Length: 155
Image 1 (cartoon, rainbow, N blue to C red):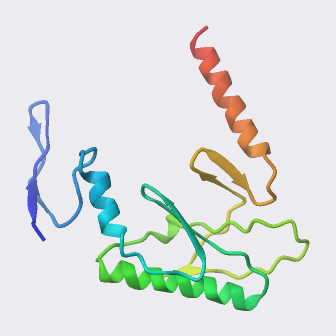
Image 2: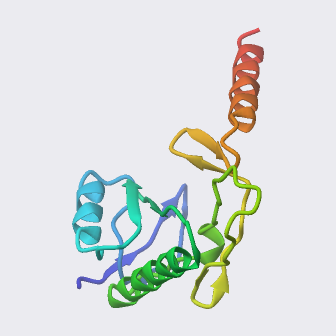
């Protein structure tokens, strides 16, 4: 791997020079293509996967404890890939959302690096806010708030 030395100059001040061991310049033309090549060998999972640029979603219908255990195994497979490629996933940026209308859903905590992943009630996926009960109140409220802010800007 090529190691570059970076120093950033803003106005008349230059940052300290430091080695960069991996990565691609932010906003570079080749960045998205190199990223896709980098993640092209992601392992196969028993769960379904969706990814868009740097967002990666691993999901599965959980009907019983065995399904929940398979989902955790997929997270462990992802951890092994991460270690092979010297990447670092941040568990605090990997929340879990249980989407269900069941009164007694199967709940299992999931973990990465021994850190239990946070459970959240809604998550933003692409441009939509997905609520764990599949209602659209959170999404609608956010769209209305954004529209009102835009309207106020033009007054």
